[in-house]
Image 1 (cartoon, rainbow, N blue to C red):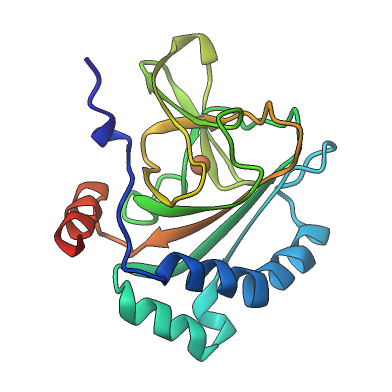
Image 2 (cartoon, rainbow, N blue to C red):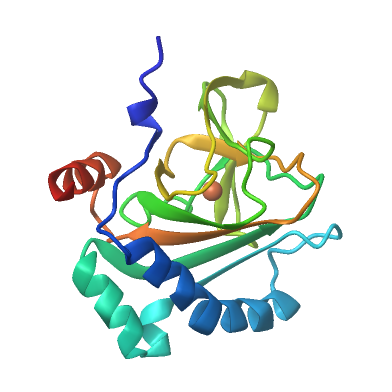
Length: 199
Ligand SMILES: [Fe+2]
């Protein structure tokens, strides 16, 4: 029996914090994402695009307020747009640097349904690093074994981004997710314990 806690955890955030973060996304992050999407190297012909930047560099007090309420956030901020029919290959996040983005707090922005889950795997095969997307991919997808599925519908989810995972959007609308990296060096399990302590 798989313990899904090894892959994802749905924290209960302080009242109003999710709304504050989503509002921050629409006001400050989305415009940067839209601009970066135009020149992103992590974009395919389907229009699926991932951007990543340091929110701290926006130097906006509103984000400082969010980080005061959630001090385990780093400034790392990933936005994923996945069009209908779009998918990612199974991968782990942030390349070989084991200290960076060990986990992330993901917020559904639009089109997040049971038709667009994050699927987790174990991998017994070899891997390679893709410089363009700064991501590690499996060499042989046949050696990946699906172990869990995470549905993010209305609420945020903490993901263990060093576990093998992929996303497929079988829905009819674009799937947009805001993914805030947890502080460098902090393990997924420590982040999970932090959220449990906060609840
Ligand atoms: Fe990922």
